[in-house]
Image (cartoon, rainbow, N blue to C red):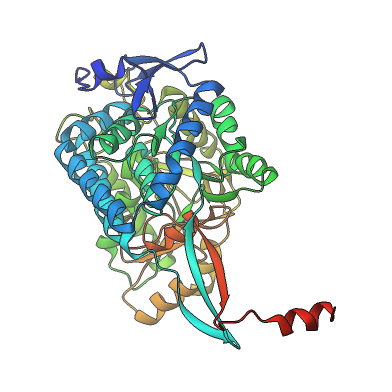
Length: 505
């Protein structure tokens, strides 16, 4: 197995809080050890953020806000272009840190996470120049009206552990491109790449205090950040259960709120689909990031003529997936984030044995992988629609497959969960594809593919998967507020209007 290779170890010894352009130690009095999920060995111990750290970070963001919000779009764009360049230059460092803290294969970090983050930075560098309001017009007599699009203020964001680098980018980049400043709390399990991200932003020339990181736990630093009176907006990505708690706190403060929550993506295979393509798409879509992905394919609904062949094909292909050391170039999937999470995933599978068929997988590997939080790719067939394996977010390398007969039934079952983040439909019939994309209740519906995302296109959910959009120009709707400006075109004040309303004096 790999040895710990963490290039930023010495620098982060100064602390795991990045506030006002510098690393600091946390003040909570409690330490946390980041554990390599592939080996179970400790990587780095740091002091967690306390409420004082959150206060300091918010104060730094508030202090930087007037200058950053008044910077021209061109100035913000130039800073973000420089930021994208720095990210590109340090790509390998980010990839190794991401794989070490998350256990994801290094090839995934190198080919997906880091390039996607650099692309996000480049996109928002350009998009910063296009934060337009509305054209002026005369809608009431001699008055001219126009709309200003303005930043909101200090944004408090909370990111999850499954894609810490990309989630930092999705939250920080649109916020600062729009002129806001930000305090981000990453998961305490995976702080490294968020800290490196903020460090790179400062190195690229973003002013101190525009991007701040507090590494702490949700019940302490997280809740204090959401409730803070100087935080104007909260952006949260994580489970629906925690999202409800975040919404309670933010709503009490009448804050702007953006939520990207859980998912249980349906993978609908019609009887005219390319079976081989669907089998490969299901395995890739279910096992991306070891299944720890809100958009992962988790429920495959297969029309009955293809059902048996699909189950057999997926089982055979899953058996070839290489589970192993994230730093081994041949590894397809690495460990889950922790042993506790691995045990949670295993619990779902063990309970499913009582009401469904576990076709393949369903256990942790032994041998040299035994110390890590590994779990084999697992296929469950014939589970009832109302079972927890079908309805609950397992968040691991587990795919559940169910048959359906009519198109109506397949689409009804696809929508029959509380979630609505992503989905896919597999068919060669353009009319079936059109109906599926229209009727499936999800923020993204792929046709004959599953998982790809683009910086130019929005990402966000329906129903219990939350609301608001990440990426794309649509994300500026989250991080800006709209002001109507109206003025009188006449050279003389309209005294007659005032007399009409208030009476002559």
